Amino acid sequence: MLDEKLDHLIERHAALARQMADPGAGAGETYARIAKEYAELGPVVEAIEALRAAREEIAGLDEMIAAESDAEMRQMAEDERAALAARLPELERRVKLLLLPRDEADTRNVILEVRAGTGGEEAALFAADLLRMYQRYAEIHGWRFELMSASETGLGGVKEAIASITGRDVYSRLKFESGVHRVQRVPETETSGRIHTSAATVAVLPEAEEIDVRIDEKDLRIDVFRASGPGGQSVNTTDSAVRITHIPTGIVVAQQDEKSQHKNRAKAMRVLRARIYEHERALRDAARAETRRGQVGSGDRSERIRTYNFPQNRVTDHRIGLTLYKLDKLLAGEALDEIAEALLADEQARRLAAIE
Image (cartoon, rainbow, N blue to C red):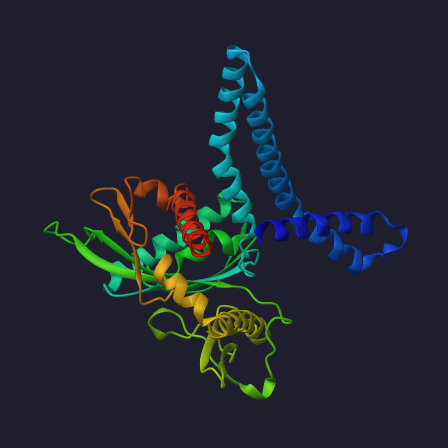
């Protein structure tokens, strides 16, 4: 059954190549669609051909070993066969990984939401640390990080912040960050040196385009009000802040960072669209959400996913039991890939086990 599927993929790749080479294949959107599918199938076909070449070579070596009378030549063939046989499981695994359906959102940009949880000012300071971590991580990857809104405390903490991160495969690298992040450290204001525990929540939402989510104007309630700063003081004298409520889902988004009501509305709609898109994804594929809840966490913001212990410079991801003693490097954005790759490998292993 699997071999039939592999044959079909190779035939499809060849057919696409013929279409691209045909002068009458057309241009514009049709050609772009064909070229995109051809490019996506390329790595799959290469992996299939590498696997089949290795199997054919092993079969050829088996014949040689059976027919060879010279002991030295037979031993060389046996050594070569053993080396090829050792590579075979990895070649098979690569083909299976490439055949796994990819999350449709993996290539999307994201809307990142960070909120202080339990712990008062210390939680807000930790939320600010997380926000800086993601900003540095974005810089390392060459992504664009845009702070859309932030509610700050007087001591440099963040009650709530929303940012847009755009670049290549952003969601695929950040999707495992959703959940509760717990911190253990001695606050600067603590005179007795006691370790306090507080938390912040993170939500990573794939950004949706207008064509992905249809929002009917009659389903929106839009309120405008005067923007306010820390302590409730007025930021400006016009009703430029915007609160949008999507009535069917009850999702509410408020935006007040811009002086222009039009800009605040545009930003609020981007966030609203992302939240509705994620809401629809969860409804459309409840089984996927349940499976992921058992694997690397559901992404629910009520679920504790990671603990940051400052006294020990330790970070522990509870979903896979991974502990690293490089908290400083993580907060600098440098070690986040190590955790992301471990979570991705764990998810892939579980998905492979489900089809084997």
